Image 1 (cartoon, helix red, strand yellow):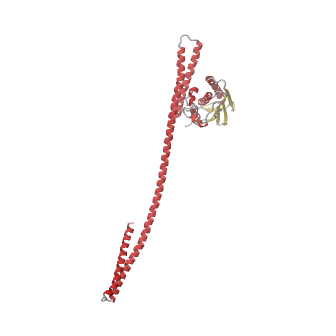
Image 2: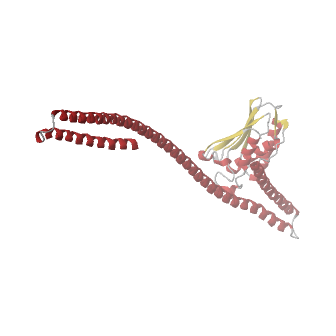
Image 3: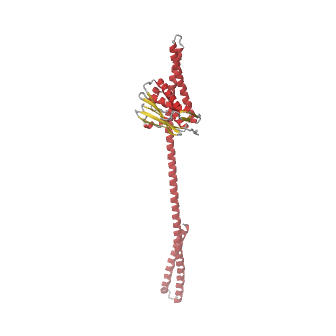
Length: 356
């Protein structure tokens, strides 16, 4: 750029010099009429001198013009190259800015989601604390109340027996509550042990029938029909954690009793392959909204929190059920029609491999 400026200045100077020399040349010829003493020979010498000077200057001027064009083209090429580089840099910067903006938006969305989840978690914990307070107070009040009655001097023996049974039942309720809290805690930290054994599936499901009968007495729902569907042969064996499988059935049947006032509760089993069984527990209860299918397996979540004080429970049972099913390498799903009932289906592999 500086060279082009210098060439421009030199060209202007040469142009001015050529113009001045031409004027002097004209002036010199005009002197012949003014000064007749100058000989013709002298005028030829002066003419040749001025022409030589003008030719040299003109040649240099032409050279400078070509040099100027060459430098200008070079400068133009460099400028275009720089412009391309600037466009490339700008595009890269725009991509980088867009990428960073997208990353910031994603982080912001994650923060917003984390905030929503934290608020939901706090809400669920508040519901949990309310429910667990109710679940603890109810049996404790019964235990304390009937213990005071037993202490009376004049009390019939049959009443003592009745009150003692109530105290034992409410004590078992508290024990069940504590057990569920401990199980949920162990599942969360990955410290839940698995005990594998091989046992008769038919005998196991007959024991589950006894669980149904005990729950029927507990919930005082004698009108509910129990249906038992066992497709496998009576000598079918399964290898898994018997205690956890029993908890899964007990909890699902207990939930069925809580939300079913008439109709039936059905349990069943079928063998999909040699290494996998499918089980189900269905009821004709109130049903579950489709948008709650995934949420009901979350901790502290119930189908209807407003019913927690009347049906009991505090929202840990199904989360533990799902945790146990997955611990046994199985899967669990639910399908339901609102007002008609629900079906919980879960698969358990016959040959268990411990989940790491």
